[in-house]
Amino acid sequence: MSTEITLLEEVVEKKTSLVFQPLPSYNTDGTIPGTKFSEEHGKRGIYVAFLRKVGHEHAASLPPTITAPTLFKHLFEKDYINGALYIGSGNVLDRCGAMRSNSMNDGPHGVAKYRNANPDIETSDIDVLFISMGNMQSGDIKSIETRFHDINIERTGKKGFAHDYSSSNGENGTKMTQLENLISNVSQNEWDCAFLMLEKRGTTLNMERLHSA
Image 1 (tube, rainbow, N blue to C red):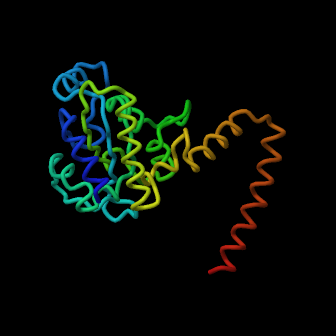
Image 2 (image 1 turned 180 degrees about the horizontal axis):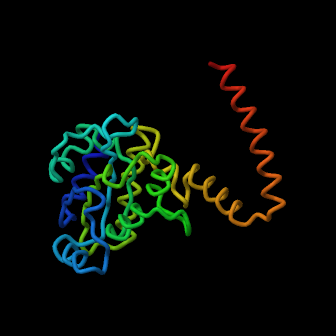
Image 3 (image 1 turned 135 degrees about the vertical axis):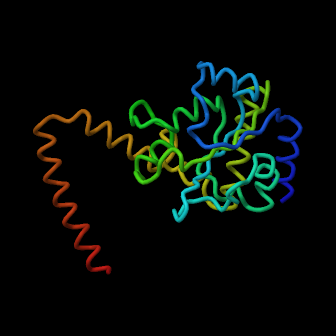
């Protein structure tokens, strides 16, 4: 617990603003609303995404009307951090734009890939806590992000539920990117052969599922 308290105390000392709102409410950087957000809150810091879809296995156990200060204060004490979908750092407006994206090209954000793999999840099902770190250097912000990751790995075994879909180092994300790249570059003959292999593999998997039922 001392590691968690120390981290929160350091962040409290350096943070300049707290925001907690739905993913679609984060405006695009460079637009008039985005500029207004940046002037009021800043845009560089730590962000924590939470899935709020009731009944979903990865839905965070948060009170329905929790405020940003309360969520931040009790991240560790009430285990709110355990339900994190994704913990990241950087320009929150850019990162939220990447999370909202439906494109799977050019290394999409882990949350975008998670949504792609779970089509029942809408962007409005995700809320994001933004901890603005003012003029703190990018390397120092990244170091804080890593400490959040380490604590959540110790608590849950994961950085966050959607981190496995990260294009940079997530297992599912890497596999999906490799598969997407392969599909986009195959010839017609390769496609025909692959389709037959997929049919055979599908039959095998269905048989295994029936035998294990």
